Image 1 (cartoon, rainbow, N blue to C red):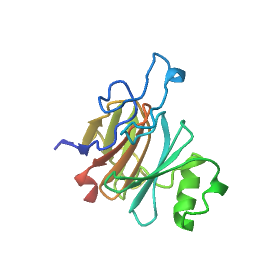
Image 2 (cartoon, rainbow, N blue to C red):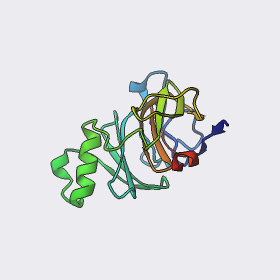
Image 3 (tube, one colour):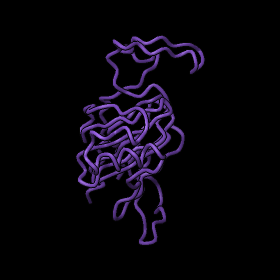
Image 4 (tube, one colour):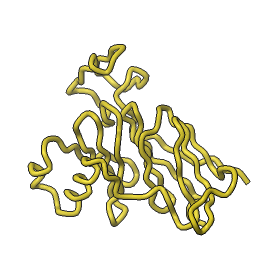
Length: 179
């Protein structure tokens, strides 16, 4: 059987393709000018790391825009961190550690579950069944086409978080990961 992963995209990046974005966009990334009034909560540059908190309640994403964003497991924006890790004194130690890991490019998560692996190829996210050694067993069981090139992925239970080149952080649901 082939399944397509269900997905919600509550967070869209700052791009000229996103009608909610009121920032100024140009042909090149250096021409991007953020608008402080813009309602878009995504990153303004590529997302290079995503990670889950140990309790599975929080996701952190780090971007080339030099921010770390915190999200609820459902994709609700909880806050944006700027500056150095040392300046984040207001955070509880576990959240600070999670944010520091993604800022340093260390995803605190995995693209594996007990019997599945989630992989990416350009703009496609795939779920494969694996053998005990972690090798793919045949064709993908599920797939999702991202609206942009995927840079990073992390899964926890049936939830998959994807970080994209255009700043989007996508929250996907792949129910087959539960089996």
